[in-house]
View 1: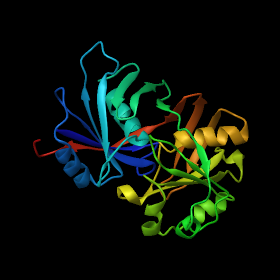
View 2: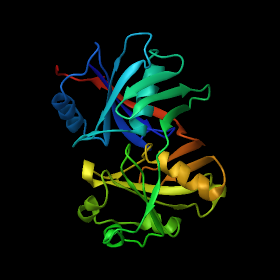
View 3: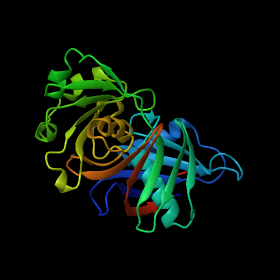
View 4: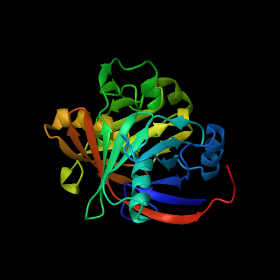
Length: 273
């Protein structure tokens, strides 16, 4: 079985967020335990598994995502990676619809090589700063928002870009503060550099201390920063060591995430299900 490693939300190898992508034959997924074993072997923040669906339905492919530790409800960068593989391999020429845990998602390829994902917008609810969060994160929050059912993160606004970049969290302590992880964010110090806001994503509860570029987090970052900056179309920089840009477009209950991807490894999985 063919397996690819794709760097998502970047236009060059060894940047952005790497994801494993396996396109399965047949009309069903193998046992979740087997998918989890493969994801643990790949050992990236997510491995995506997809299989084709019968024509005429509401979606073209069924899609699931696994970290090395667990299955997740939504993943942006592994969806971008899967769409990239479908288009570069000739298995898709137009928009692709995916049936996933969080509902129907779609991707559209553009002539310039970018891909746009259509995801549900996260519903933000402001809440008091949880006791111990500042110590766990290593910075004092300005505001904290719950991001709703699909991603289950805490969105934490910090004072400035430099504070976000300098974070060195206590990951063991951070686990207690959200269902999936913590997204730290601040306005860009200088928007002339090509981005409007910065973020970093920490997800130790699902086996990922820091995720390089988290597409799903931008379904919460988009409404948060659109409300503050007064524009629906923005660009976010996830300021991890690998780094990556996500263009966000808020469209009411849907958020469009646009980026590029690069296949860096194309190999064969030497095992059976």
